[in-house]
Image (cartoon, rainbow, N blue to C red; front, top):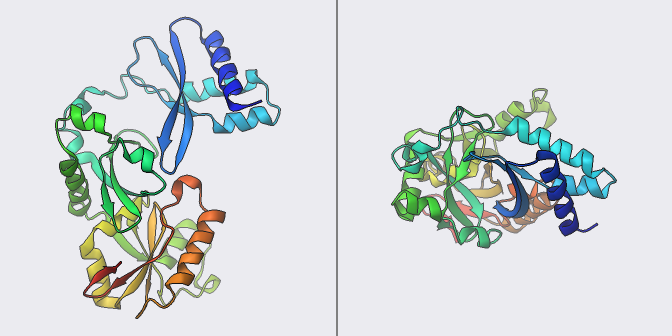
Length: 293
């Protein structure tokens, strides 16, 4: 069964189960590096609703799951994820006063997101990246946020430069950028990790990220952090290993840049989720000069 047939079956089955008073729709949603089918269920009177991505459900149908089982699971997710008006008031976000302090910068690969960037305020960074902006939504789990697009820009009566500058300023004001030894990050992720597991105790590799370890690669926009590191440890490679962090490796020259680039590309292809991929080539940051292009 092809995707179009599955989409039609899912919509018809959900509409039948929900009855009058609900609208079911499926639209293409541009996420970082990927384009997904996003399903929404809108009850009459609702202003916001969760988006449920269908790729896993397509796989389930292809593997033999019944349409009844798939739509029941979708309804469970809708019910558990539904945002009720008493939990979230959209009105404050209609004006720029509230969002301005909640903006933060995100770094993505601009070559993999050309279509997304057509409707999103952004600035280019180095050869491969674009800086975009998200807005935090407090009171929800899992780092809830939304992408700032041109529609919001017009509604807020502001411009791309203001949005981007404010997002970076918020990061710098909150001192959100952190630079830690790779060993420390591994200990956070793997409690059983010990120095004997990997020869990292000499701190030859570092990670630049943010306090939440979430979309932390944008921390490289804090130029003071990079300059301070270079003053202490000298020039270094910057491996944009994922949207969440950048790997820093001190080196006196860039003679290994091709090898590190190949390693980064291999990790992208074999280890990272598609929406986490950031860089495809490695950059060299030279002390007293900055990134060498």
